[in-house]
Image (tube, rainbow, N blue to C red; front, side, top):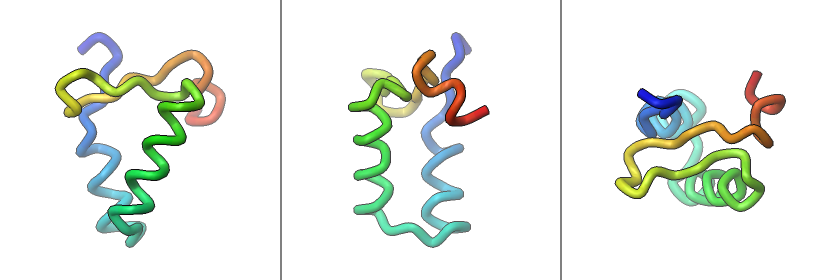
Length: 58
């Protein structure tokens, strides 16, 4: 799927397993996008790892 990750693979574990809040999730996603680690698909249902984030999530 062109390197895309379904957003539910991130938000589900964060919110339900790690017990993060929706505000923390949104803030973390925004930071990752702003720093160039992730790219959010226009549909907002997928993200793609960018080269700047490769080492962070390996």
